[in-house]
Image (cartoon, rainbow, N blue to C red; front, side, top):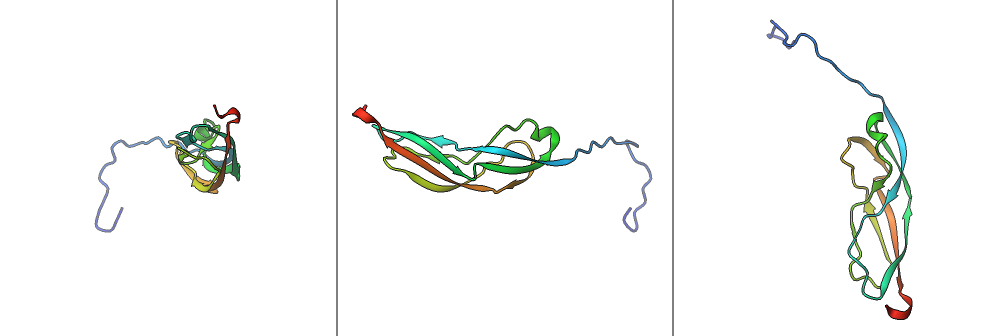
Length: 116
């Protein structure tokens, strides 16, 4: 106890502490797209670099994670490719570290043949 303070009683006298080991896991990155390309265009391909990130967290929470998403990328009205860097969005589970915390994304836009 701090100087000048004495402990008279603890209530409850016992507490239960659960300790879990931290571990790392590699997860694939998924880009969260919003909007649609311009009429007559479509998303042909999405390139992500790196396409995997390493996360550090407690085993029970990492077990549930199958992938990790970027922050949203708006592609509304695009008629050409878009290159950008996107931060990784932290999932609702508690993670101690995400490495790297951002990825480079290239969205390849293609004109739909026949114009439909």
